[in-house]
Length: 155
Image: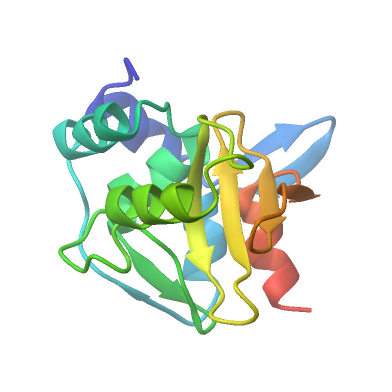
C-alpha cells in the first residue's frame, strides 16, 4: 500500500524498463499488445479497500493492471480485478477459493484467474510470483510475474 495514484500513473507511463540490462515491457504495455477487453480504470482508494478486505498487499504490477484496466479479459483469459461480477472480483473470488482450499493457500496469495479446467486456479503473491493450484493441493510456482504469465499465454 502507500502508493499514490500519481506514482502509479507515472510508473505505468514508463512502458519499458531495464532489468538486468534487458528491456522489459510493463504489464500495461504487455496487455495492450494482446487481444484484450478492459473494464474501467480503478482508483487507488478502491485498490486499497480490496487489499484491506483480503489483508494482502497486491504486487506492484497487479496494482498497475488494476489502476489501468480494473479488470480485463486477455487473450481469452478472464483475469480477476475490481468489478461488480462476483466471479471476477478479486476479493470475492479469492475468499471463495481460500474457503475451498483452506489448508493450502497462503494468506498473501490472491486469485488472478480461474481457468475453468480441472479446478486449476492461478494465484499471485505479494512479491508478484505466479502460482497454479489444483483442488486440495498446495500451489506450485509457475512464473516470476503476471507479465511472464500473460506472455506465456501467447506461446
